[in-house]
Length: 100
Image (cartoon, rainbow, N blue to C red):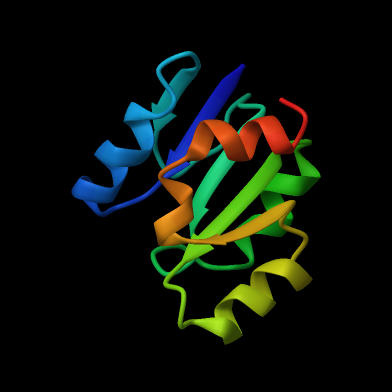
């Protein structure tokens, strides 16, 4: 399974990536052919979710736990899962819940 990480915070990126050692992981800001995309919606526009979904990717959006408004916008944009930063570090479990 191919995974795209859309993250600009290097520390958080490293923690997420370490939980995905079983997957083919790419870091970037453009979807190519990845099955699952993790997107930090505090770093990238929420509207990106719609574009990713239109390409057939499962989308996991994440942001700070207090950013309720942004979490709501991510859900409305079609994210398959919306989680706080504290939970995204267990990315493998999130993928498994999505059926991956």
